[in-house]
Length: 90
Image (tube, rainbow, N blue to C red; front, top):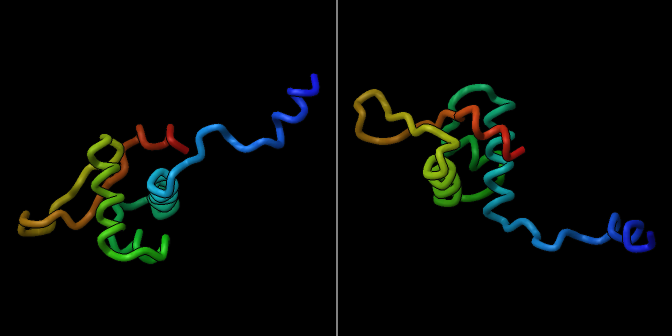
């Protein structure tokens, strides 16, 4: 019984890394905006540089949680659309 009581106030055994936290916040941002995300959106929300924002979005797309969308000429990926499977990480 004592272990159950103390267990409430102990931290998790495996803390969430910064990458996991950034991914989770990016998913929350995509839900709030309800439109495809641009790297600048993530950059402004998380207060990170452009490279980290792009790395986070690429990581989410590699996991199948976001779909990359190319620009009008089809050369560069400029937006990322959230897949419904991403909601399970929240």
